[in-house]
Image (cartoon, rainbow, N blue to C red; front, side, top):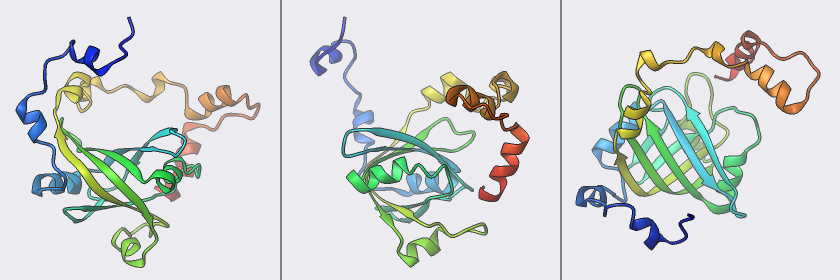
Length: 201
C-alpha cells in the first residue's frame, strides 16, 4: 500500500521526543563550530529551479570549510569533473543542505539553509591553502542546524576497520565507465587514475 499523506505516515511512528525537536538551532554554537573545524568530509545537497536534485561529496584537510562566524560558513570549491551540477543549482535556487562527518565519530552535523557563490577576494583568501586558491567559494547561511544521532553510522559500522571492503571487490572506475559508456578504448587503470588525480588533490 502506498502512503499518500503525512497523516497516514504519522500513524506508523511515535511523535518525536522533546530533545529531538529542541536541538534544532538557527545558527552554529560552539559545539557545531568545533565539529566543522574537525571535519574533513561532507555531503552537499542542492536543488535546481526545475526541481532536479544533486548530492555531491566534498573533502579536504580537517577544517577545509571555514567558520567565519555563527551564521556563515565558507566552503571552497575544488577541482572536479566540471559538470557544475551543484553550483548551477545554487545559482538557480540558493538552497543547500550539508552533512558533516568526522572520522571516528558516529554523530554527524546537519546544516540546511541558503547559499551564494562568492568570488570576493577576502573569501577566496580565507579558503586558500598550500595547494590552491579556489575559483569560487560557497558562502552558506545556516537556517537549520543540529547534531544527528549516531544510529546510522553505528549500524553501518562505517569507521570499523573490520567492516572495510577491499577496493578489488569492484572493477576499477575505468572499467565500470567503459561498460556504462560503451567506449571501445582501453580502460584507465587504477594507478593511472590516481596519478591523474594527484595534481588536483
